[in-house]
Length: 356
Image (cartoon, rainbow, N blue to C red; front, side):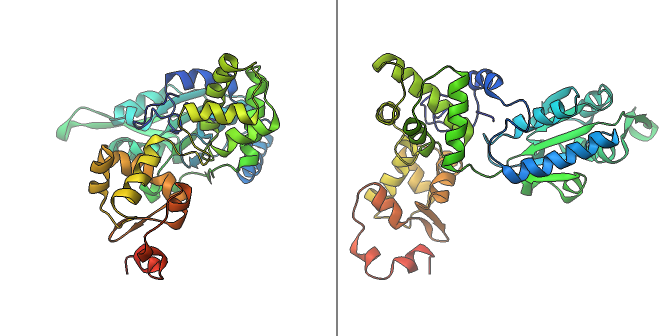
């Protein structure tokens, strides 16, 4: 499962952020499961993917192209590597932002071996010319390389060996229908349940040679925001605390104390998340308030609040986006131990929530 680090609240560098940094990428290589039997969670995806791969092996053919969508840190990269391992094929890894021209893609495709798996992360960020070239490559295993410019340009057809494209995206809605339709198998990765994350944590603790009690794993899992990458990052930080402050054994109390040091509360909220909620509740009475105003109040960029903090707060039912602005829910008041204004408890809270 893909996994990350640090306590900075900037996008991609938060302890509970879903994006992997350099340290996480190195650790992930050691923690990643190697086959579908080892992969924890995503039961439906695993079952369906297992059928696709078994059928391809039985036919002696390359597997269908696979599209994996879902939030960062749920295991898309890991599954791509498992697909290659299950098919006994090498894997080539690249990303959409790295392919800015059709020639970039042509160079990659022309060097593929037969049966090789090409993993294209953030496929929705690929340039349009490269995207159009990919249509033909996926369907006909052929690309037309343009030589020359203007009226004298010539298209030279280049045959490609059969390969399997595994595309990963966090924003499936940005993929054009012609591209989505060329994938033989599509799967959406769901957030993990706490019980599944406990299994992930126990497996990782075993690989890291960390002693952990069941209630310690449960404490970490409950603060991991449904994401294996975050669960593994929190495990590593709790391990550090247990080694320095205790005897190395992770119990519930040790995990809670360690995560308090890193400002990750019982629901997985960090300083940025709580800052947004506290500003919304204490400065604006629970809202509604505009996004830009809320961002200024917490001293962050508008994009940071909207793209980094809000998705989890909305998913947790602590904040609602309405036509009139951001509004705190009763759960937000309860989580911070605050009492909502009388206007929100006197019968018109529902009206405020939906901006009527």
